[in-house]
Image 1 (cartoon, one colour):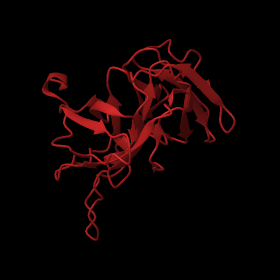
Image 2 (image 1 turned 180 degrees about the vertical axis):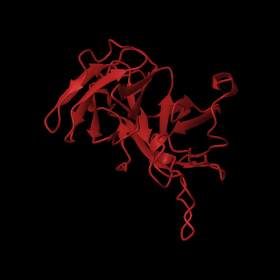
Image 3 (image 1 turned 180 degrees about the horizontal axis):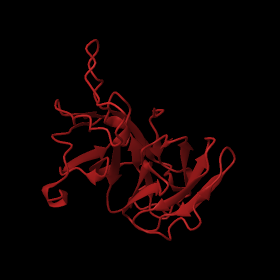
Length: 228
């Protein structure tokens, strides 16, 4: 089970003295993705529980909110922490600004050998030992990386690299928090493995909190990204 927390990837070295709080909310669609079929078959077929319906899938751990404009580049992106706990990452989707160093800490009892599917050289020797083990790698390009272990295909995490330090995870209630300087921004929302196809904007005010509500019309991938 993922341990959820609102996390803002806004690093101290990139912070402006005039950064202002943004406390927003995502209004999710009423129809959410169905729970996928099991990827591993057991000895018996899965049946519906007659006593209690199967719990719906939680989508908020897979959402990221990013604010971008022409001046939002991180000059000194620093580090972004990512925890590997057993058979999963505590954040299945991690946001990081271009140039940041992603530091993975293995808090489980199992050694893993991490690899980026899109770039086999990104992590180098990806062996990460349990408890005290850490592995770091630098993300230099704005793209999405799939991090896994070839011996444990169920272990999958996404690192979403963007040209902005104003990144926030989303709480179970659909809320997000970050700090950004005054100005107009494009709002981008990432879900699971793709950017949502909708144009939103927000103006961060100089005084007080900016409290945008973003209505998400669909979590589906844009038509151009869908597989045939």
